[in-house]
Image (cartoon, rainbow, N blue to C red):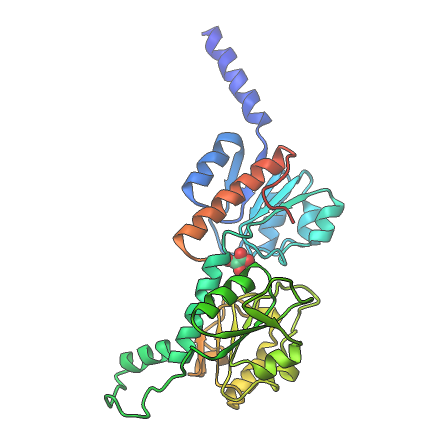
Amino acid sequence: MKYYKWFNYIQVLNMKKKLKVLLTRHLHDFALIELRKRYEVTVHGGRIPMPKKTIMKEIENKDGLICFPYDIIDKDILDSANKLKTISTYSVGFDHIDVDYAKTKKITIGYTPDVLTNATAELTIGLIFDLLRRIAEGDHIIRKGKWKEIFGPFDYVGTEISGKTLGILGMGRIGKTVAEKASCLGMNVLYHNRKSLPKMHKAKYVSINELFKKSDVISVHVPYSKNTHHIINSKLLKKMKKTSFLINTSRGKVVNQNDLLTVLQKKKIQGAALDVFEDEPIGKSNDLIKLNNVVLVPHIGSSTRETRHMMADITMKNLILGLKKKKLIYSV
Ligand code: DGY
């Protein structure tokens, strides 16, 4: 009997010693199992995204935080965290975290680049096909029972992809991968970046104005920051050809959505495909939905089984390493 009491006492002590971790939403089971072996884990199961006040309350006594791109980890939240040592975000983007302020508090931050490069580049290529060959539009026509003629020479006419010019804004990991895939499709690739890059055999560096003037398709791959806020606005959009398309799979706020809406409504460009929006999720009343020259997808750049599994793995490992005060796999 005494032995059991002693055993229970040790168990309680061990429980007390366990570090505490907050997840703002559910993660893959394999990652949760690893986390639960080591920590006292709280997983938010309520409204998504987790309301700010709830995060502020929950974070108070937590040592680690796993968050997602919709969680705005700002000064208020960081100030509510009395013990926080590490944040691990399930995303390549970290614009939702006040990184500078977190660093003043010596909080380490992990993220998940590389593993989603291919998935996001594949989505971009998919959107090029969709826009230029009017795939989603064709699907809508059939579903609405509006397919009237078969093989009329001017019906459902799209644009050939091969031979067209793709303009990439932001030649990081994803931009480069899109460039490679697009050149395999016979596209000519131009790019604009903060600086021109060496060894870009398949893509030519141009000024941002030239990029917008010369491209048949513009694809946006810059991260969001105050420097890239609304970098694409009416001034640049007006430079685009009337027959051209814009694709955004980076962050919504990189594009001034009202300016884009205006050029689309006035048919100053031919179309756009958007995976990201200024405010997500967009609702049914959003004016973009009324246009048939846009393809809208719900922020699915990284959304493949393979990539999401790898993201969960890195997110979990970054957190464990951070709490052990070791070097993260990918740190901001
Ligand atoms: C990222 O990882 O930043 C994506 O945009 C979210 O899936």
